[in-house]
Every structure is written in structure tokens, then in C-alpha cells.
Length: 361
Image (spheres, rainbow, N blue to C red):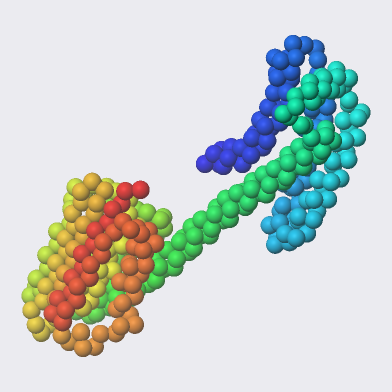
């Protein structure tokens, strides 16, 4: 990745070098082809190219970024005009120094021959020289403006993507830190309630909890985990929760044993299961929990349904019960925007969740 970025950063420099090589070599090739004299070098062409290059790079490195891109456009155009006018005199003086008699003779002969044609009246040479110089200079300044604008847009877009990535990582870290304490808060309450009733079950619960903590400490520290590890985590969590559930509660769990091992964000499904155990179990009425998961290629299908306990529905604390589910929604929006389908159906008797995720990159 670093090599790729280094090569991408060197690309503009290589492009500038390539253009200058073309400007240096091409005129000599044209002279050799049409003048029929391989030893003839018109140094005036190269001096002119060098002066035009100075105009371009002054505009590119100084005028455009310092004035035009900083909303000082009026001053930019004044300075650009002054630059073009000043270097016209430099160009004119250099042409006198590097004047080639043979080239001058050819130009004079061509002008005399064209003057004999009654249908064609060529403008004065000086006027054509000013016109050509002005046109090329304006094009170069405009090209410097366009190139700098493109580079600024590219850099701005890159910075925006980096900021969005940093924001995504920060929000995911924040959401994960919210999920973990919420999960442990409920689990520790469950273990606490079991200590005085059944010590062996409490010890088994602590062992299960240690496995869950190991997963949270080592597996979920990364942005992604394997689906097989997440399924094992869910099994351990459900086993832990079943230790305190009455046999009257109908619990149906169907998790895949040979699933397609794709990468997913950790702790993505646990809030739904946690919510089902917290609000779906009734000690007075008949209740049930149903959890299913299937996989197909890069798709993960998750289904969770539970009864709604009346006594818990009446005393439901919205400030705590909704934390996990809201976090899942935010994480799905951040990680799988446009690649997931979440349907939550809530009635006074049944709460169900259907989630389909496309994990393909």
C-alpha cells in the first residue's frame, strides 16, 4: 500500500518530466524531418519554450494557489496579466539574442511570397508575434488554473474520505464500548441472582462468562471477526442464559455448524438475542424464544423472535433496553450501507427481527 501511494505521489512529477522531454525532443525531430539539416539547431525555439515554462510554473506554484484558490481572483488576474506582459519583453529580447539568420531568411521569403497573393493579406509580423505569444501564455495560465483546481479537488476528496474513515472507526469503537458494558451489566446481574440459589450453576456460568470475556478481549478488538467465532460466542451466551431460564420457556436455537466462514463485525447479533432473553421470558405466562441463522455464499440470514412478557412490557425501561438495538442499527448503517435489510416487527405479544446482510466487499 505504501509503495502504491509513493508511486501515485510521484506520478505528477513524472508527467511534468515527460512533457518537457517531448517539448525538447519534438522540435528537433520536426526540424530534421522538414529542414533536411540534422546539424541545424534553432535555439530560439528552446529559449521560447523555457520562457513559457517559467510562465506556467510561476502560475502553477505561486499565482494560482496563493491568489486564485484563496478567493483573491481580482489580484490574481492583475498579476497574471503583469506576468504575461513582463515576459513578453523577455521573450522579445531573447529572440534578438538567439536570432538565426537562416530562419529569418526563410520567414521573410515566405512572407514575400504570400504577399504576392492578392486574396491573402497577412497581418504585420509584430502583431502576429504578440497575438501568438498572448494566446499561448493565456492557455498556459489557464492550464495551470485547471491543473491546480483538479489537484485541490482530489486532495480535498482524499481528506474527506480519510475523515469519514476516522469518523467511522471512532463511531464503531464508541458503539462497541457501549455494547460490551451493557451486555456485562445484564450478565453479571444474572450470575448474582444465581449465586445464592445454585453454586454449581453459578460456577458454570462464571466459566461461560470467562469464555465470553476472552472473545471480547481478543477477537472483538479487531474491526472484523469470522462468522464461526461469532456463532460460537452466541452459543456460549445462549447456554449461559439458559441456566437461569425455566424449563417452561420454549427455546428453539438453530445456529449453523458448517456455515460459510465470512468476516463480519463482532457482537452484531448478540443485542437481538440479549433483548429476547431480557424481555421475552415470563414467569407467569407461556413464553418462547426462537433464534435461527443460515448462510448462503456471502449472505447471512438471521431471525430472532420472542414473546413479550406482559409484566416486563409494563415496566420496560426505554433508556436501557434500547441501547443495544440502536447500536446495531447504527453499526449496520456505517458498515453495510445499502447492503443489508433489517425488519423489526413489534406487537404487544411478539417481537421479531429479520436481518439479511450481504458481506461481499
